[in-house]
Amino acid sequence: MPTPSATQQLDRLQHDLQALREQRLSPHAFSAAARGHSALLAALPPRYGEVLLGLLDRLEAGALFTEESCSFSHQGLADSLQLWLDKARGAISG
Picture 1: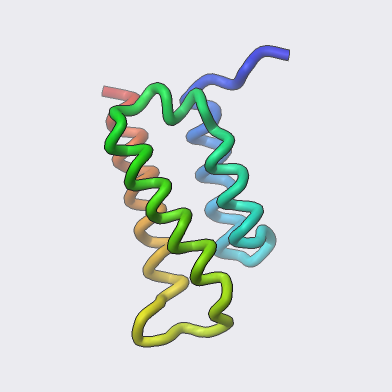
Picture 2 (picture 1 turned 180 degrees about the vertical axis):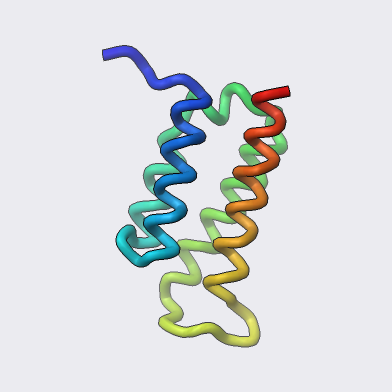
């Protein structure tokens, strides 16, 4: 089976982020899936991978919190992941 393209992996990650927001996907499952998108990460400048891995580390650590707190926001992290996706899409498209 051929490896999905970077664009396909980006689309899949967008879908997974929506599932994470709707709590249909756990933070750890989202993180594992995102880390597995090697074609996407290879198509982007190295800094994108560094930023994504930092966000995923925060997501996994934040999974220990069941509610928003002054030091952690599930919504804020999901918004940061969306911003990363938007910028990655722009980098791949353009």
